[in-house]
Length: 372
Image (cartoon, rainbow, N blue to C red; front, side, top):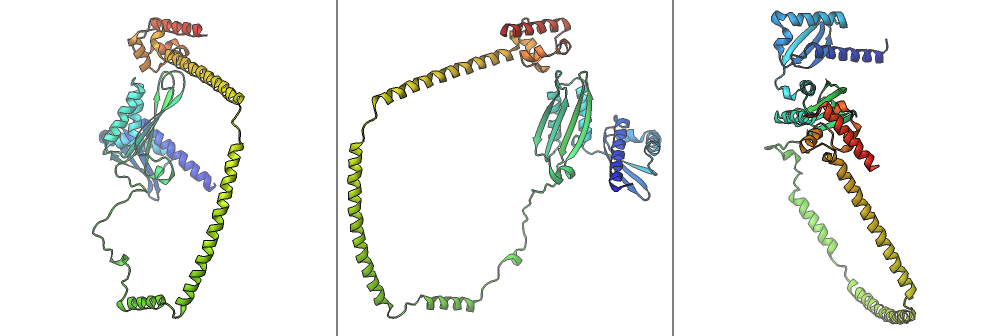
């Protein structure tokens, strides 16, 4: 058997064992497991919210689980160690299972998501993220995310630091997948830093320069700065020549500048004013542009009015403010959502029965027919 196939089979076996524990220890608050194969046997560390339920009365349940591991997964001498989870709100698997059960009991997904992530952050987590995938409300599948704090998605820290848990909520409209990611309070991120005090920095300080070396440097600079004898006269002669040439150059440049200014004045006099026809054409173009912008502004205002009318559920015949709020909490935020939904979906909203669902369905379709 190839090395790649061995890794694949080990991963599949680990995943199947994790699913087995999740089904068997659901009531005990299963929080994950670590599996390690040693020469003495297979060492399994279970994390649970209620270790007593995992062990069972007199160890009956733990012996049953050990026997099933040997028979179903062919593990050699499995040794199970059960550990209690100190803070269940910081265990991603336990939180994911709790959120899935809350959704199955009828909690609204936004209320359940915000309540769960607030409990995670109150427990001291540095960051958390909850993702819901599936038919959360209505017949269309979508993704909903709830974020708090700081979370890593890529790289080695996303695998070693971030605790991930997956859960499932089986609803009437379909299955909703729940994914929870948590960074625990004691996690050390690669970009963290600490300021250390009372540290000996003598080894990092540069070596001091001795007094003799400083005097030698100063003496060398003084010799280099001394002027050379006999050079003062030559310098004065060169300066006088330079001043004479500069005066001649300035006179020539001033004369040329006067000629250029005269030419520019003559050119300005020769230019004629623009014809009146071009001015009238520009005025006509400005009027056409203003008319076009006014028409576009009116069209935008009409579109905004149509959008506001489509989002107000009270325009449907028989729907008041209370019914509109109940439909909005159930996920039907516009007339289009009511029109696209089925009568069974509408009847599940609070205070909306089958008869009233049929009525508002017909009312929404009548509005659509009137618009077209």
